Image 1 (cartoon, rainbow, N blue to C red):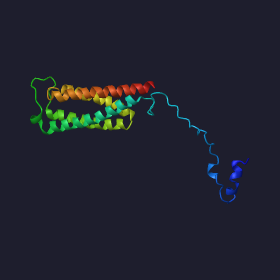
Image 2 (image 1 turned 135 degrees about the vertical axis):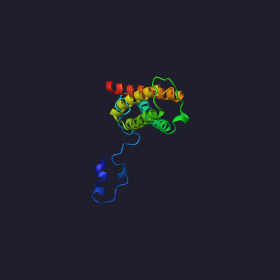
Image 3 (image 1 turned 180 degrees about the vertical axis):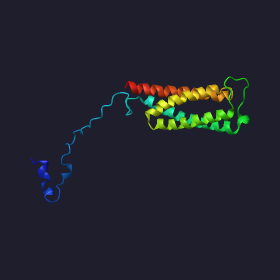
Image 4 (image 1 turned 60 degrees about the horizontal axis):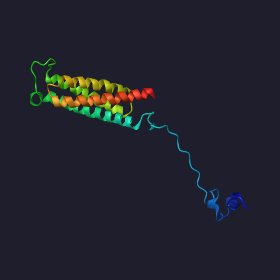
Length: 178
């Protein structure tokens, strides 16, 4: 019986390859090919530091909502600055009575920083998650105080801010426990 080395000896020396040279080293017919070992990932680890896929999705959703909330707060601030009496209602005797022009600048500033922090959360910056929680709290407080001027919109933004706080806080606490 000849070995694979003997069958390819003429080929290595510059001759023509034997008819079955392409099969040299291949498993015999009917023998299953060796299986490659699959990586052993722990359950729930999706390559992002031990967080579940749902938690990663909530963090991405929170970052997207931060960007959206920042953009909408920015627009709300612009409207309050440039169209003071035409769009918002004004209440007399309200405890937190400020001029709409001042509220416009507050919403404009919060919107810009919230938008930037949301973009940084999407980039995976841990400090941006902590900043996002602080900014969402500030945005919720500002919208609570802004309730008499535009109640429906303020309630929606408060609900979005509460979800942002929850999603970022649970993502950070899960990362700390992992």
